[in-house]
Image 1: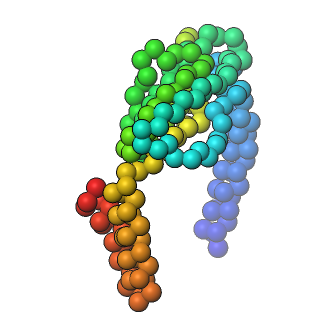
Image 2: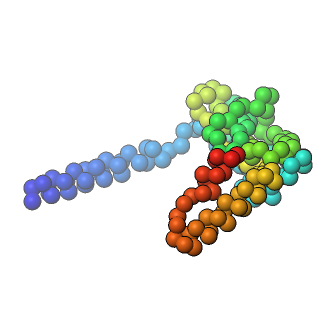
Image 3: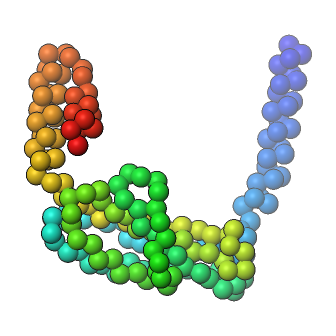
Length: 169
């Protein structure tokens, strides 16, 4: 009984402490960049092999206290978390020009920095440009999915698709 009362008193104290701390946390830092117009969240058809895709990406940002802003665009590929800064892409807009090569789909995003304190930064949404996979990959993917469906029909749950896809490609 004493333990329950102590636990209840501790929870009430914690709730009170959090209610006092949250308004301070909710206040925005006037030096933190704010993206006022982000990249669009759109679905695109896959870019075919050899096809050239061109699109201008643009964001708008501001810093409430008026500090200067620095932009840096980044490019990554596939599901990799690694992305590299695009040399010279330091303006609010960047024109993407990619040729479909059947490889991993590139994605782009912009990071907005406060030049007075570069630890204060914010990232835009990412935009992925889907590439159509090569014919060999599409055939293999369809074949493996068909085999998996047949095996599941017989209650055999084997992730063949993942195995063969990673093994052969």
